[in-house]
Amino acid sequence: RAKADGGGIFRNFEPAFEQEQLRIRRTEQELLRALERGELTVLYQPQVDVETERIVGFEALVRWDHPTRGRLLPGVFVPIAERSRLITRIDAFVLRRACADAKLLTGVTLSVNLSPINLRAAGIADDILATLRETGFDPNRLELEITESALIDPGAAMPLNRLRESGIRLALDDFGTGHASLVHVRRYPITKIKVDRSFIMNLGIQRDAASIVEYVVRLGRSLGVTVTAEGVETREQLRFLRAFGAHHAQGYLFSPPLPLEAAVKLLECQRSGGAGSESDTGPAA
Ligand code: C2E
Ligand code: MG
Ligand code: MG
Ligand code: MG
Image (cartoon, rainbow, N blue to C red; front, top):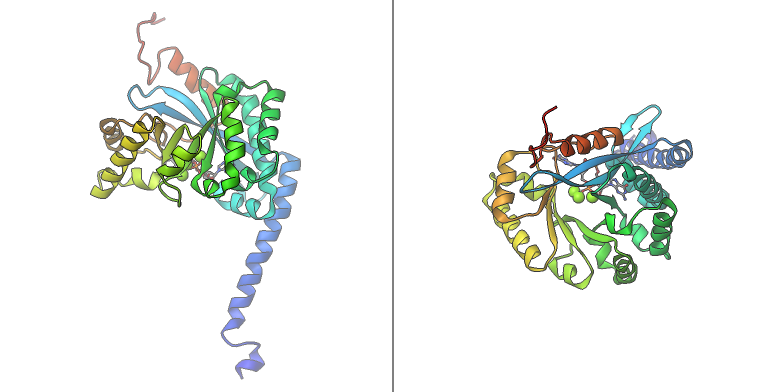
């Protein structure tokens, strides 16, 4: 009987699997069109100095304004793009757009994410440096964020050294979640570690989290790299980070990712003595 029904318990499983494959393939096709039709946009999230709370940089974060599904987060489409190599075009687009946009974000660093897939591509350093030349963006103002998984590949050393020698800074993103360790920080020309949000989230809740963050900050400092905390949402978390000596922080406590115009305004507001400013000495009018 079950056979006559067409496959017993697998009856429901197979269509679900096929539907998922179909959805992935459709997303790939749509993503290709999205690149051509300009449906991708870039938002900018401030990174602040832990002591002064002043903006020291912005991280570029990609969004997809899908015609029917609305605004999609990278978690929905970046993994699919990484499977199909579309990630090369996405990251190239984000870098070019961010370098052009960041001319309005003067005096601060621009951080751009780079997929481990792209770090493996031949000529990646040349491509990045060519984009900087073409957009007239100063390599010393650019920081590339790479994840620990990118460093497992020994082939990463060459492009990373080349990029660093050109003045670009290198941040190790989501630190603590992958297989890399502080050993990698010494082996590669890493200039910053970004302590993953999962540790920051538990500061003041789990005793272990405080110990881990304190340890990472101390080791990072002793290795001479900048330590940034990701996903800071509360004053209490910020107090922990101050006590431990973390350098920078990023998170909703300060600001969500913003459209360029709002990011520019925030920076201008800070300069004219608004929130987060140390120098309130200027004339009030
Ligand atoms: P990430 O590089 O670790 O970026 C930080 C993520 O945390 C962002 O998510 C940001 O919106 C979110 N976030 C920031 N502050 C807070 C907070 O206080 N609380 C919470 N809950 N979340 C916070 P988003 O924009 O969804 O990006 C997710 C990931 O997608 C990024 O993680 C990055 O790995 C990847 N990604 C984003 N843009 C690009 C890109 O242009 N290229 C590549 N290859 N990957 C990208
Ligand atoms: Mg990042
Ligand atoms: Mg991160
Ligand atoms: Mg993260």
